[in-house]
Length: 288
Image 1 (tube, rainbow, N blue to C red):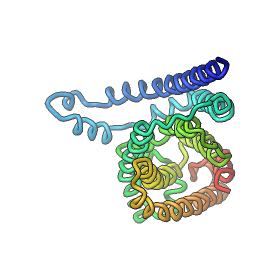
Image 2: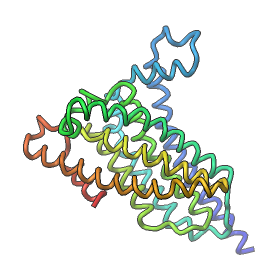
Image 3: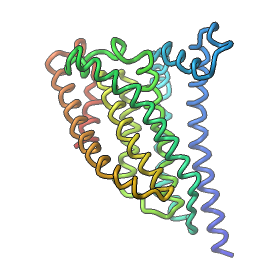
Image 4: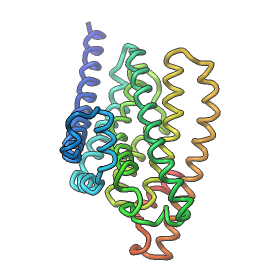
């Protein structure tokens, strides 16, 4: 009887943590839906496909209201991290039975893989265009308003920022499958969420670099997880070394971009280089 009660308690804890996390996600998504509806021109709301409406939303997206949202709701990432720590450090001790959830796990990975592929398609070409036409220094110092805050790239950068909250649920599957949650795993999720929110809050110039790189890495990574979760280990082996290489490249390029932006900031000053000292210090802590 005692074992059954402990299992029930563990289930209740998991449901509570998941419900609270989903509630926070729902608040963010509700604001997103409201913003998207306002952004749609009236002429585009009739007699066109959902896909065309979505494209219109991308093109007409304005990032300023979303930056204001992150500034007005700095509590959201803090609450999310607090709930996440409960999931990481408390719930595993309460879970007695192993819960696989293969269909849900596969769907989760496929959803994030598709999301990341689309995000990479929208952000990487935009970054390369400005990198080739304006130079590297432009991409690490110029105010995002001048080159990526609005429009299609801005829309996917905003989605990237807010996607760091639902991505915390990656750990949920480790917990219910009775797998160890290593320090590197939870440290990565927590620091990336806080760093991204802080970056968007301060409208830093380097934001597109990190969004484009992270989308690209996650496109391969979640595709790999999806293949493995469906027993497709042979094609997954092909992706494994690619993921290792691009993750190393992401760390190297991320450190280089952060260092370059910091040097430009101290050389040019805040008026000519749109980065934040606290933000690039957080970047150094995350990459080093």
